Image (cartoon, rainbow, N blue to C red; front, side):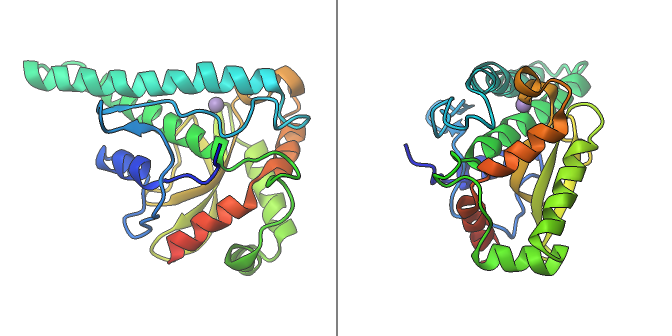
Length: 240
Ligand code: MN
């Protein structure tokens, strides 16, 4: 199964929902799977590798539960929120608009974050791990000082998320600069307009079976399965 994916549809779809996830100027030519225009609903794309493919860094049972249960829950929650908002418009009854608007953003961001997560990883030695190359490597060196400084910043950001959340490497479209951001939950403290290129999930469901409370060990393990060629391809497209 190809790990080369097309990001545009998902990003445009989520951007059209007002989630502000896609940078309007980034315009990547690929989109991640996750929306089926024939049924007009968001869908759970398959993992781009077998659940055990990221062993020993990410264990198969966690991968299965995380994808099949947690990610599926975000997809269902997003579709449910959209359906409920459509019902509210038909009925002219917006008593619950605050609730469903929050559900839309939380689950919508959860869907995109997880889709990005699966696709920015690959089995170690088979695309995963190593170092970035090309323009992305140059940008990381220029903007963070060195790869090691980037990695230290990224791991520290991931380790310091309070509760569930993410560390992401994003491209800020106006400056075309890379930032490391720290998100809480699925969307809090996101930088509007930024294009996520790499993200690590630090909700406990992402690591507790194997790593228990040792989030730092999990984040260090994650560094061994980053699919840098894919991240670099997204970077190249985004900076044009
Ligand atoms: Mn998760």
